[in-house]
Length: 454
Image (tube, rainbow, N blue to C red; front, side, top):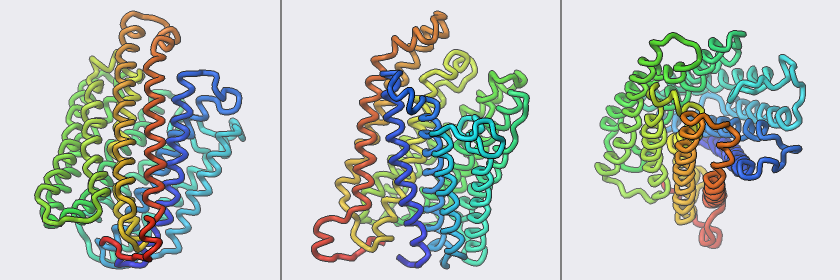
C-alpha cells in the first residue's frame, strides 16, 4: 500500500459488503413471496421488503464507489486524501441514515410526516431528514476528493471519476422536488433514477474499470485514457436523451417516443465499448498479475453489463415494443442483469483487487473468489432468462389477450419457482465472496505471510 489514507477504503468496503448481504438476502425473501404470497405478510409486507432490497442495493453500490475513490485517488493523484477525519464522518452519516431508513421502513414510523416519514417514491423513499444527511455526506465527499485531486496530479481517470461523482450528487437534489402533477413528478424522478444508472454511474464505472485495467494488465496509460474519454463521451451522448424511453407513456409530448427510441438504441454502444475495452486491454497487456480473481470480475463486469444494460435494455426500449412490455417481468429481467453486470461486478472487482493490498497479504483464496463469480453470475443469468420467459408469457396473456393481472400471475408460478432457485445460488455466491475476501488462507495464518500484490 503506497498511501496510508487508502485504508479509508477498507471501512467503506466493509459496510458495503454488509449491506450487500442484506440486499441479496432480502431479494431471496421477495423471490419466495412470489411463490408463496402470504409468506411473512403480517411481519414484512412485500412493499417494505422491496424498499429494503432496492435501497440497500443503491446504498451499498454508492459506498463501493466512495471506497473505490478513496482507494484509487491517492494513487492517481500521488498524494494522501485531504482529510481522513471527514471521510470517516461521511461514512458515519451514511450508516446513521441507513439505520434510520431501515427502522422507518420496517415499523412504518411517522407515516405521513413531511420530515420523518417514508416519502413513498420508488428508490427515493427515504425520509426527508435522511435525504438531507445524504446531501451533507455527498458535499463532504466531494470537498474531500476534489481538494485531494486539485492539490495533486491530474489524470483522465480522476477527471472522469470526479465528473461522474459531482453530477451524480447534484442530480440527487431532484429528490427534494415533488410536484403535485404526476407526469411532472415522473420527469424529475427519472432525472435521478435514469441519469444515475445510465449516465453518471457509467462514468464512475468506466474510470474504475480503467484503473483496474491499468493495474492488472500493464497497458500504457495513454491507451487506457483514450478509451476512457471515448466511452465517457458515448455514455453522456446516448444517456442524456436516452432518458426519453421513460417518457413514452407518462403524459409527455409524443416526440419523446422517437427521441427515446433512437437515443436508447444508442445506449448499447458505450456498454459494447466497455466490454471491448476490457478484453482489448487484457489482450494487449504485458503483465501477468497474480490477482486473477479481480481480473475475472473486471471482464465479467464489461461482458454482463453489455448484455444486461445493452442487449436486454434494447429488447424493450423501442416504443412500439415497450407499449406492450412496459412494467412486465421483462423489465425485471433487464434490471437484474444490468445492475449486477455493470455495478455489482464492478464493486466486487475493485474490492477483490484492493483488499489484499489494504490488508497486507497475498491474494486470499482466489479459488473461492472465482467460484463465487461463477455461482453468482450463473444465478443472475439464469434468473434473467426465467424472468424474460415469464415476461414474454405475461405480455401475451395480459397485454395482448387481455387476461386479468392476478390470473396471469398464477400461470407464471413455475418461472417464479425457477427464479427463486437462481436466487439461492446468488446468495450462496455472495456469502462465498465475502468469506473469500475477508478470511485469510490457512497457510497465511500459519506462516505469517505478508506479501501483498501491488
